[in-house]
Amino acid sequence: MIPTLQSETHRWRGRPRHGELLLALVSLLFVQSCLSPENMIHRVALNALFFLVVLSAIRSLTGSAVRMWGTLLAGGVAYVTSWANEITGTMGLAIVSDACFALVFVILIYAVGENVFGEGPIDASRIIGAVSIYFLLGLLWAFLYTLAELIQPGSFLFPVANTESIQNTRLISEFIYFSNVTLTTLGYGDVVPLSRPAKMLAVLQAMLGQLYVAIVIARMVGLQVSQRSSDSVG
Image 1 (cartoon, rainbow, N blue to C red):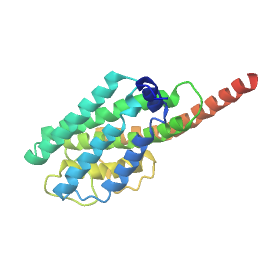
Image 2: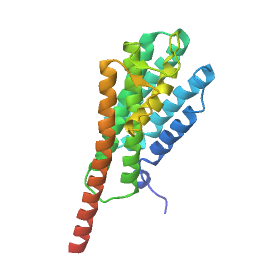
Image 3: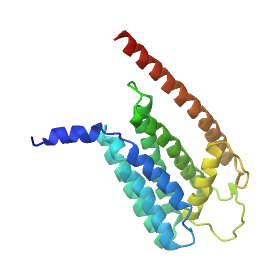
Image 4: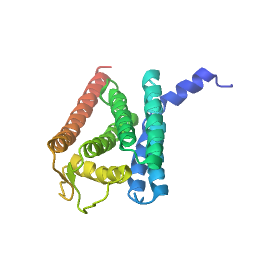
């Protein structure tokens, strides 16, 4: 029997929807640590990795065509402006690029969150989605920190002083590290927020990191108990 297009589409959507996204996020974190922001090829590769995360999120966004196309559009604008920033070195382009990437991660967190915190049984897709949101929060705040530093230079104190203007890609690399350290409340203290907006962002992320873990565990346990109760009644 030859499968119809409708059955193939249903089968494709029925698979775990967040696996590719999580794989792309983990790959991004590991690969970017091996790239040098001083090397133009490496900077271009890092921008391409961010856009790869956007493409890997398509399956997580299939529930809403508006979100899917909006995410692709924002990701495309971010990628193009990041290329333009590499060529021209215009700060305005860097701000647009970072803002678009931040918007992409906000949409992804909302879309994946609907699946993770919605009704239904606990399955692999829900668990993978919960882990993906945690990684997405780290990347979202990395771009928020970068925007804070671009808009108000000197908002953060870095371990190595640099008298020259810091490149946008270098900031992102630094803030991916700082963001995840803050999210997990490790607090090594090698990167220090100085301005009030930077301090507030750091405090909010640290609080969110703790609350998210507690909320996810409570939600998962609640859904599991409800699922077992329904099975016992049935």
